[in-house]
Image 1 (tube, rainbow, N blue to C red):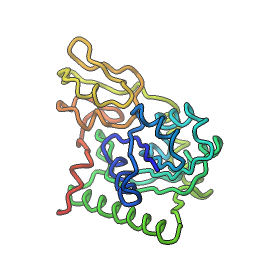
Image 2: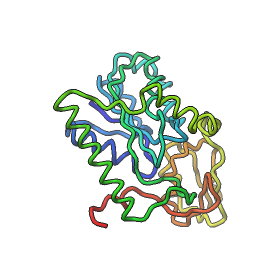
Image 3: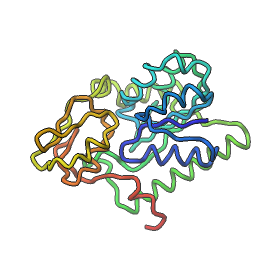
Image 4: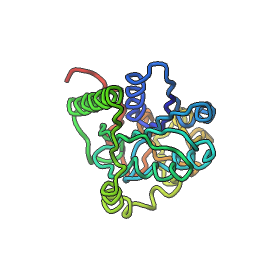
Length: 257
């Protein structure tokens, strides 16, 4: 078994690492941007694919990865994990339908609520105590799923049904479809940028580089919010105009309130 994931602020990484450590301590967990992900996909028959839901859809970077390596999915058993701030609809189902076209067998899906990761919006923001509670509930959900799989072979199938498909389609995807049909060029970098290079080194797409002492957007943003959540100057925004909170999962992984 191998885990391949896209994670911006750490939510999805937390969930897939928890799932794999509880399921198979020997299983590797590899970021989707890592060159080793392709070879791991080639060599393993069982894959856990995890990503954050964006407007009830699959991040384009994940779609791109799946399609670029379409011949490697045939016969693979794939379990899908998606993370969401509030609503996912058929976040797992969107990717499952693509994978099935390439011959993959979908063993199941989980849609896990995690702390909001959109740093430049006030919507969905919670207190530290509330976010820690959300993470604890996510961990408990993963533990139960792993126990059910181990004891009965029953995999959760969240987001894979036709009603879930309708919920995702009409709940969000139709209204925001243009935001997820390709990479975004809308990342904004303010004059507060000091050219430290942290964003460029962290970007999974290599979308940012430093020119003349400041970061430059190359127009291939995956909307993962990694750069926005880590910029020391809070100089980067995407959907909003101001950084409200730099959302990093490690802030919420504590056990006390």
